[in-house]
Image (cartoon, rainbow, N blue to C red; front, side):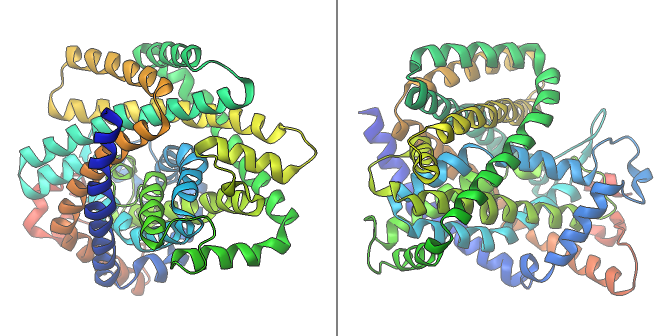
Length: 471
């Protein structure tokens, strides 16, 4: 009964309202920025390489912050790469057909403009914390619109989405992977994950963060290399896979069921879950960076959308479609595991074992990161230690529930909260987006003058009081 209600609400809210709003906002920002996500790719790469080599030249203006532009980019990539890339892509293909991949690409290419705007705004309206900057939608809504109720609403929605809904998806994915490969009981995995989560969020987050900084990138690189090997092994099938994706995207020669509507909605929903463009989560990380101009971090975070979807999600899609396992009735992380095993051949399940290990680290570190998003926004509403303790216990309960619930139930719940949060954020950036456009013009003007762009609050006098970090 509960699952039917959640799926019905999710169907209306995400398949129609969120998908339409996402596309409209993406088109508006693409036109308003004159395709910033396409024409400034070279500048994005230059900024990323430079920020990886050294700190910003003028970072002395922000000497209390220890977070570089590259570190903020890495933090956002770490939160993106994981369940969405391995399980989300598989779910999209299983339900929407191969054409879902095409629409996943489209929402990444167009939605990158929304990602640019939201991350630029996060930088513009960031505030000074004890050790680094803080910011995100709750802050730019509060400071840009002076409507606290709107900012509080977003803070509540991101807490529900990341702290509860997305964490249930992460634990469900881990439980499914280990049940499929090792026949490990879901109930035991639920207990293990819950205990580990509570131990970490109640005190051990620093040590696990240091561990994750090493393990997660290694796992991500290993997965990309594995995908590259499988694609090379099936190189002759790639033209057929591309043709299948495009044909199915427009309802031509349906290869795995799913008309154009299903392909579009599943591609956009799972694409958003993975790359988070316009969702309102990435700006929380983008705001922490010390840069000389807000546009710099906006451009770098735009590149993160491409890295997530066009590289990693595409790798998973090619593995699944080359294997033909999407026709076998599997779903979620199990489909990805079966596809890798089929592609490697030999009757072994080495691929499934690797994916199980990788998804444990990807998903579990995402649980910790998701918890952090929630705590940050709860403290924005009210800085209460009692409230935080209650939140931590609730997160543990959702991790347990997610591991033992059905795949459709946890994804349905996640889709509803994600849609509400995304709509709240899109309304804000559509209202405040004019500031990002002004900043982009200012940035390009300084580039044409041969200068390293630097922003001062006096550039937009009307909001100078609200942008104290740029005095």
